Length: 351
Ligand SMILES: *Cc1c(COP(=O)(O)O)cnc(C)c1O
Image (cartoon, rainbow, N blue to C red):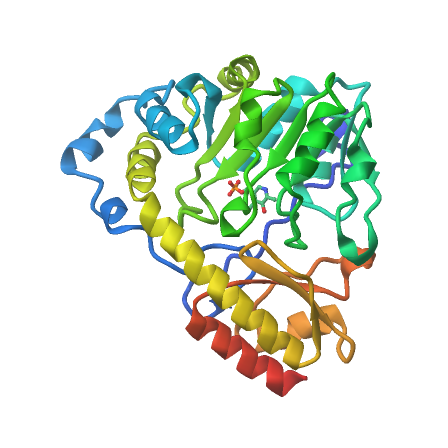
């Protein structure tokens, strides 16, 4: 840190993203990307005219893309907010809705980005206790009287709440924002988007990074009551009014048009997940039941970090977290059947 950094950030600990080794030598099962290519319509979407138009700013309202997304999600355009990946939504939401003398509550075992954004804005956190088996105990969030963020399914465990449980949390915290982070919802959980029509304190965030083979394109979408969306937009306009670039907008439109293709991929990923879960259990792994595109696993015979290191030596990357509560575990993204067969083969040798 330079001596010029502002006082508040003197001891700031930032977020560490998963390793990005993309030269083709590694099987990458560490950041939950899709193993499948974008849809053919996306690959064909950019024309010379689009590239020539790069000299112009993009439409800051994202009108065309919002209309398509509204149709897809069964809401209106003014219920939609667009951002440069969904981590941006988290950041804007914390800025827009959490007072500095208030806390944000989230599950004790959860997405490691939340405490970083809270630190960035000087917000206190409430790490809410889990139930047995690293499950979220939704009752611990009911009537809490704090702002809440919950990934559904949860990261890095893959376990999901029902919409009935989410509704209970939203209904019993009427004076606070409840943000449901649905980065992984398309792999088998239920979306809370329909509840946004009924509850003005519910914001749902989505990303194209996992389900829509678009992690490199950077598109996040928030869905909620029109007033919440306006608040988010005003903070975003104050930060970066053109936060979604022209090419991303165009490719994202083609992505929404190709939703059937991505649904089919999600089905394949679910089938692979079930097959891999069974194979891992046969090898003696404990595998948490997952509704996401990853599994969270441990084995009594080998330490979590050691397993991560052994796989890395064999050119397979998985995600290990140093948090002592979960350091026995590794999170393994669900890749193609071929990639997972290679993983299972190496694991059999290591174990
Ligand atoms: C991956 C992920 C995100 C956001 O990813 P972006 O690429 O920024 O859209 C948000 N929340 C959770 C829980 C995630 O795992």
